Image 1 (tube, one colour):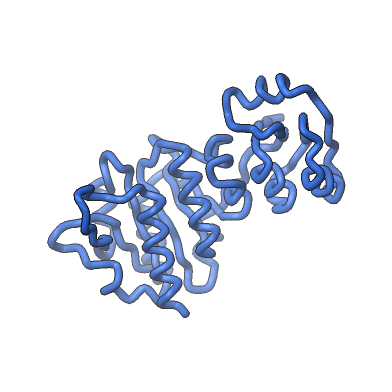
Image 2 (tube, helix red, strand yellow):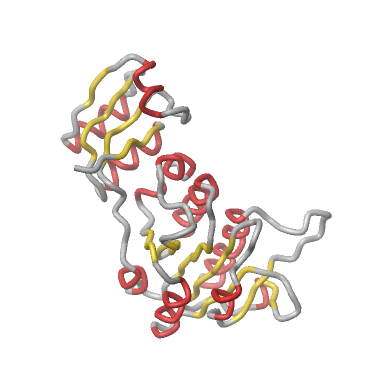
Length: 236
């Protein structure tokens, strides 16, 4: 039976609250009352252990004295994400840093997205580090893993979703100039490579966030936040 370890107060609490995946056991070295209350409500055993046991299981992660043994992350299907009314979707192309993925998931939860789509290969999945960086938002946001992002974009367009690649260039539009009030997907690439050519060609257009300083780009999670909240503003 496959098992994963997640660590940190918020990730463990949100895993207990969301009920999306099995939480088998909580190990606590600090006696946190909120953890205990949520675990009792979910019927999950809590074991008090020394801090060095927590450190061993967290493998260098910032654990705050708490870890949980959980089942595998419950990825969603793309169809489930697209079934939401007026889907608002984030597509991440080749993002390999779990902290960036986690930060995007935290933003996505705050903006109330329908889901996040990531590739199965050459990209990070929802690891323990991503869960921690998301502050537990990963346990609430639907995440789909797709073998072929170009094909996934075609399915989105068949469902009436307009896809925009986040990149600069003469063919790009400022994010405030687009109509983002309907079904929309934002496609963001890694900070080093950006959106791959074949994935970009599967988009309906491109969008950029104007930069006024010396640095030419934003962190992927910050860019995601700007785009998502503009879409939310336009939706009222």
